Each structure stands twice: as C-alpha cells, then as structure tokens.
Image 1: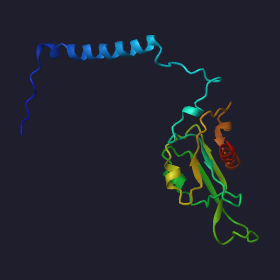
Image 2 (image 1 turned 90 degrees about the vertical axis):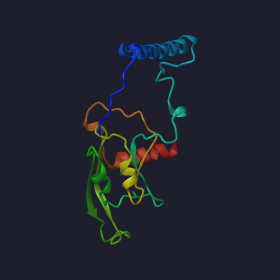
Image 3 (image 1 turned 180 degrees about the vertical axis):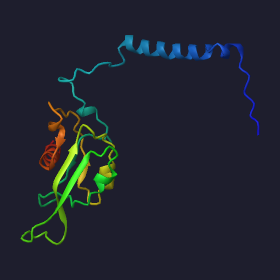
Image 4 (image 1 turned 45 degrees about the horizontal axis):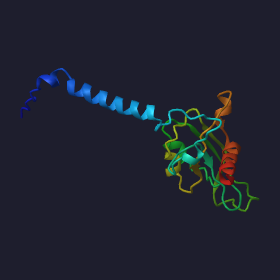
Length: 166
C-alpha cells in the first residue's frame, strides 16, 4: 500500500499558519499578563500552596500507624520491589515472642526512603496490601546534606503524625 503525501499550499510551505497561530497565542498570554489576570510569581514564605493543593496531590510519603499506635508495615517489601527509582530500602525482622503480635506478622527493622531519588509516583502506596504507606500533602522538604534527605522509619512515622494533626 502506498500512502501519498499531501501537497502543501504556498503558505504552508513557508510555515505561515503555524507562525500566525503561535503569535496569536503569545499575544493572548501577554494581554492576560498586562491586565493582571494571571499570577506569575508566588511570594513563597508569605504565600503558601496549602489552600490551593488539589485533593489528588502527591507529596512526601509517610508510614501509617494503626489504631494501636504501631506501624502498619508488615515488611512484605512490595513497595521496595515496585519502586521505579529504587528509593525504598526495607530490612525485615521477626517480632519477638514476648510481643502479642508475634507469629502473626513480621515488621521492618529498617525502613528508609531516599527522598532525593523518590519521584512521588504513588506506586508504593498502590502496591501496599495493608495501606502502610501513603503520600501526604507535605511539599516543602529540605535538607542540608544527602544524609538528611534519607528518611528512616522514625522520620517517616513523624511525617505521618505531622500531617495527621494538621
């Protein structure tokens, strides 16, 4: 089967329709900017995104606690396996026999998320069978070093506590 190429008009050969369309869009944006209908810059420390965040916004991940106050994670490592940038590291451990939850499940000895590598895709949240990890609305994460941006189990639980109270 042979597909014939369309014949372009003289205006299309010189890209005139594309240039005129682009100029019209640019002038429309310029008119909005001059009339003041568009906010270009947010003054960050004074103005916050908190009131403007959509409900589906995916921010920093957090480890969820259950109704008894312990972490829900059972160290199944599904989130670690599904994570595209390999930002999650879990080291599982057995629960001591003296604990009432022994023989029922295991727990994470270490749970770390490298927030520099995390792409906030939400696949860890979707893969978790016990809803132990969730993406919060926290967006202003900062650190002075790479080590500060590796969130361990305690820090992830504190992120959950901070967003639950807010």
